Figure 1 (tube, rainbow, N blue to C red):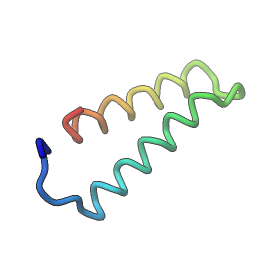
Figure 2: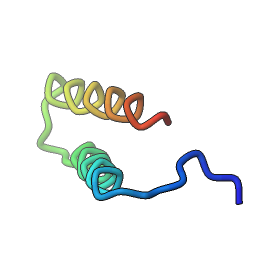
Figure 3: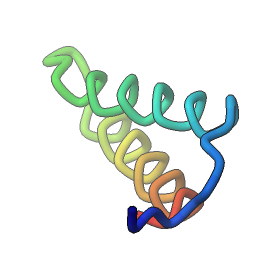
Figure 4: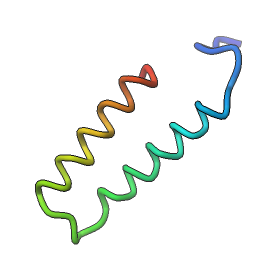
Length: 52
């Protein structure tokens, strides 16, 4: 098996769920351009933290 991490932790799961939630927010048509950019920034920072 070729995994980056040997152990999958609660923290890993939490980060994945946060990321999914942020991506879901992008589909909200009520978001302003500024809010959309903020969500995209959060996604980018979280993905970087997760090594994606």
